[in-house]
Length: 421
Image 1 (cartoon, rainbow, N blue to C red):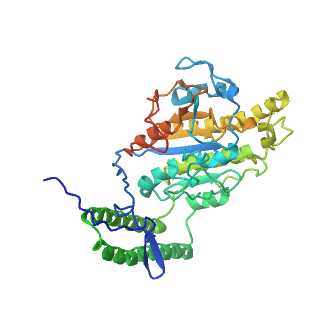
Image 2 (cartoon, one colour):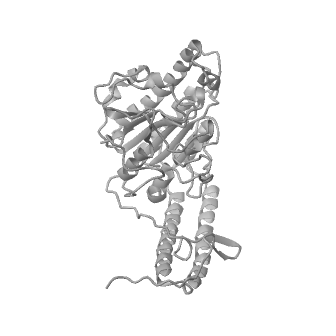
Image 3 (cartoon, rainbow, N blue to C red):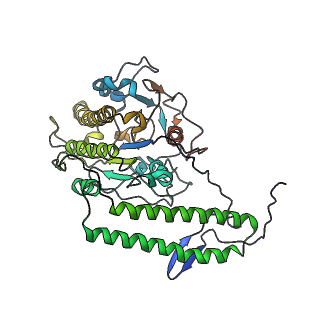
């Protein structure tokens, strides 16, 4: 017999909360609110990882975009030092996020691809890394790492559209990953986790009372929500166990780069990320590089990074900008080589991208995209239309499928990216 849906015609506010003892927790969407669905994740037999490196000021297009497409492309200037990695990465040109504009303000859409044009939503959506961490992050001590080389902003957003502040302090990051907490701090963390579990117990009682007022369809959804709450309780229990387990030994001292040399900071951050992946402390990482970079140590630079990005095609500014951007790409490539030497690159997707295709004109089209590792067949230049850009969220859908999440779409995607094998 087919399932029969019976509606009680009871209307609930979609913002309805369960409240008890001064604590509140949002309900899932029910038929009595607004129809919605979610695709459950499937277990993946082999661990997959994702690292995003994002640049707030983009890359100068002619210096990274090959003129030829396919596998026989000749490397553009920025890519010439990366020829040993040619078969490990794919270059994507002619792509961007549909309906995302606003120049620098589009930073919030780097990994969410959330449209921000007039007339569309003003609230952000969940970012690619956090969607992965939401389903798979409980398998490691840290569900994700959100980092910044010189500030607290990040491209990482929760499912409610809230930005996750980034960690920029290298000493704190190293300690968080590799230095065991003192007993007093362990006790404090345990108390916080146990309080979280007690909150779920309190809210659960009210939810069970609400269930009696709902129709069968909504009761099934509420049962599914109870399952997710129990899963959360299980993750909290796992977190409690992590508190008392020793952290891995990094085998090295904390890096101490010159804070006035952004390239040294970028290198130190990438080194710590590599160690975090090697010790399986986390599998999902974002590293944002803002436009306030300090360029001490980059030879021949007489102007600030942001000023150089607004070059207006000035020859001298373009020459200086090229030195800065090449230095950043070289550090990205060095990170890939570290992963490759430790046999992690085949299971780690590494993305380099930006919110700007042309920083000088604040243009959000033709974004720089270098995509490496992760088990894909690389070694090609996917050249899409420079005037009618291909949706970059399609690549994000590939990434979600690669970690084992069988979602049908992500943001404004239209399917998986053509040519990404």
